[in-house]
Amino acid sequence: MADSGCARVSAREAISAVAGSFTEHRPAARPAPADGPLGWSGYGESRARASARTGEEESVVYGTAAVGGRECVLVSFEFGFLGGSLGSRTGDRLEAAYTLAAERRLPLVSLVATGGSRMQEGMIALVQLQRVARASTSLRAAGLAQIAVLRDPTTGGGWATVGAGADVVLALPGAQIGFAGSRVRPADADPYAYTAEGQLAAGQIDAVVAPQELPVTLGRWLAALTVTGPAQAAPVPEALSAAELPATGWDAVEQARAADRPRAEAYLDVYFDHRLPIAGDRCGGRDPGLLCGVGTHAGRAVAYAAQCGTATRPAGYRTAARVIRLADRLGLPVLTLIDTPGAANDAEAERAGAGAAIADVFAAVAGARVPVTTLVIGEGGSGGALALASPDNTHVTSDSYFSVIAPEPAAAILKRGPDEVRSTADQLRLRPQDLVELGVARSVVGPARAQDT
Image 1 (spheres, rainbow, N blue to C red):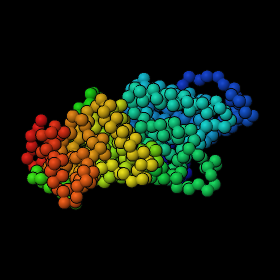
Image 2 (tube, rainbow, N blue to C red; image 1 turned 60 degrees about the horizontal axis):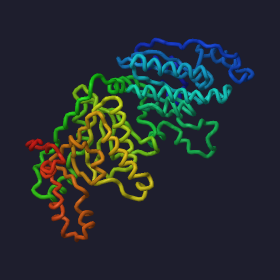
Image 3 (cartoon, rainbow, N blue to C red; image 1 turned 120 degrees about the vertical axis):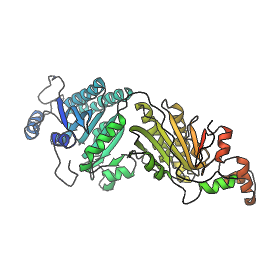
Image 4 (cartoon, rainbow, N blue to C red; image 1 turned 90 degrees about the horizontal axis):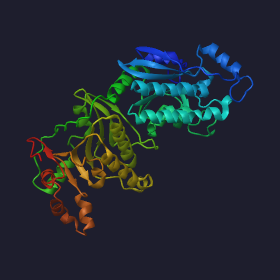
């Protein structure tokens, strides 16, 4: 599949690039006026030319396919057919594809390349977006995954439904992506904002994938998101540090803040055979300090949200909530790693909705029907850490602490001087062994695995 700097590939070339096999389906034909629902002069001739040029009857091809050895329903847009635009017959095919996925209990993969709604059908074309949204919502309610691959270009209603409405959104390098197409966006608009790379930076897509890597990546996503049987709790990761249990509260804080302490990236690398990132909150933000996605552990798919030791920003919390809810809908267990001094509390974080974002994660964890496993691997600072914690399956490492707030601000709140910070840390009972005794944590995972309650 080509990027935007190369000749655009056809719908069937896009299918051949990712699928080992493909069986086309077609909806039942229905009569329609030659010049469409508006009687647009010359529309029938334009359709005929598009069909002769591409060999297709419409701007979408769909059917069942095997991608990476996994069965799915595959949809591919033909940009050469009137710019891959959505008309009433396109709506017929898209709705039929979603219905086929629901009937066969299969995930749906869309290879999108579209300029949006078809002008020659006016509002009849535009309302096809409602049909697509309804079909997509029904498939989501059935617990079936949707993956979109954004080719060049993906704009207008196709982006705002089939593309952005998917659970996982991948894009080819350099693809033009945006609700506004190139002919209708402001003349002074930053072109980078309308690229795959720009949309990734803005948290609107999950990954930019090179064409040669796409078949393997799609196969892994399909394997990860196709769940059979009830979800079993994710095993607790082994501790990567040989640190002893701290003698005092301040010792616990210093161990958790040590520069050479193992961080989330190291834990994830050891725990998972491979990981598939989910990046971005779909609201214009990303937080590199909170890693989210789905990985494979001992042959099983596990969703994860892992803090990296920085103050977590609203975009991070929103992304984590998104991943937890996706896991819950598809039946995947969840692993969370806690390591943050607390939620970001600067003015920018407040403007970005820090409180609402944290509340959203609390709600996602509280409402999860799948098991959530939590390991505190460093600092557990206040509600910004607790939001990601399982209420009944939280564990701690020997080089971690968990506190209502860090000792320094706790002392400040209590109107104590800097010389009382260490004694305040002791009073907070934030050591790993204290957390087990208090019932906040189930176990200490360390060099000599401590009591399990």
